[in-house]
Amino acid sequence: MPLPLLLRSLSHATTHSPPFLIFLCRFMATSEPISPSTTRVGWIGTGVMGRFMAGHIINAGYTLTVFNRTISKAQPLVDMGAHLAQSPLAVASQSDVVFSIVGYPSDVRSVLLDPNSGALSGLRHGGVLVDMTTSEPSLADEIAAAAASKDCAAIDAPVSGGDRGAKNGTLAIFAGGDETVVKRLSPLFALLGKVNYMGAPGKGQFAKLANQVVIASTMVGLVEGMVYAHKAGLEVGLFLDAISTGAAGSKSLDLYGSRILKRDLEPGFYVNHFVKDLGICLKECQRMGLALPGLALAQQLYLSLKAHGEGNLGTQALILALERLNNVSLESAPAAAPSP
Ligand SMILES: *[C@@H]1O[C@H](CO)[C@@H](O)[C@H](O)[C@H]1NC(C)=O
Ligand SMILES: *[C@@H]1O[C@H](CO)[C@@H](O)[C@H](O)[C@H]1NC(C)=O
Ligand SMILES: CC(=O)N[C@H]1CO[C@H](CO)[C@@H](O)[C@@H]1O
Image 1 (cartoon, rainbow, N blue to C red):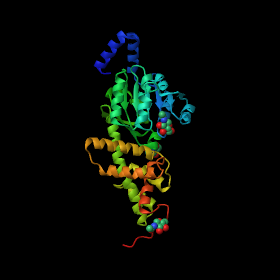
Image 2 (cartoon, rainbow, N blue to C red; image 1 turned 90 degrees about the vertical axis):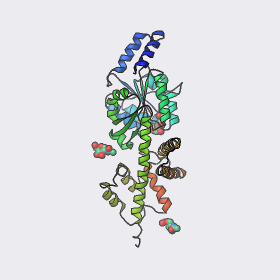
Image 3 (cartoon, protein in one colour; image 1 turned 120 degrees about the horizontal axis):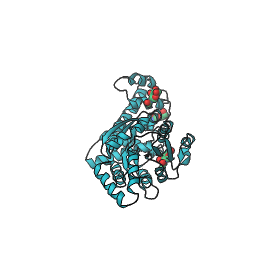
Image 4 (tube, protein in one colour; image 1 turned 120 degrees about the vertical axis):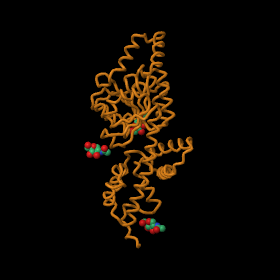
């Protein structure tokens, strides 16, 4: 905790309840290193990513309290020993560190900041919120300020690496906020992947959005290459294997190439969520006066998937947009090699 904030807390604590000594104990408790015996963890959001991430925390021996709007989604974690809470506020009141990974910025606002049911209302002094949703940098800033005014801390820590990274505990984590808090959280982050400290509140979100800018055009390149290879009469699987170790190799290819070939379009990462992320990026670009035509193109292609009712497929479903554009299907036998 920065000194001015500490002093403000101390003067607050001496004139109001809780009494100074209790406050001091709590403050000291929050400075303790994070470990399964001292730190109670809360988890809000048990979707495609969250359920695996929360699982790693339980497996490491932490006491975990979980909330999801859709109770059934939290059941696998309850089976592993998690406590179920009825609201984000109830999660926070039983936790020292509360993670959230939900859908949209509006969900983040409601699960963290709602005065009647939000996590911040239930968090004790010195508690920490860690929002791992890809969300708006300005909202991350607002949450950090709201947390500081309650003598709590908030870190924005969105992730990249998809459901496999979540399963494997190999996510890239982009953290923004107080650096000492991020350092203190490192035993927890280490269970989920590799944490990268990016700077002040909101900087984690900016890093994640820039990450999405890179992925957007990479995905377009990947599916264009596949459609091209198919149309040219190549065997697409053979083609992907061949390029994977060359300069065209990428994580996107590793994660999605074979899923596309097997027509496995199940979500590791939802089209709907990607359209949301790219929309946030474009809004930020507008504000910054920044032209990123590759990003805009990718966003339009992904939007066309939503128009076809494919928003709940995974991002590899981008192949469908390129197939429709060209009246081809990777499922059909490749055309006879075109004459030169
Ligand atoms: C997940 O872990 C397995 C085994 O350690 C490894 O083979 C695989 O490449 C990892 N996948 C990802 C996406 O990190
Ligand atoms: C589009 O593809 C279908 C199925 O392969 C084919 O029957 C049709 O002739 C194609 N349309 C044009 C204009 O080539
Ligand atoms: C509020 C909340 O945590 N909702 C999540 C519950 O789980 C679904 C999917 O499993 C997510 O999409 C929600 O964001």
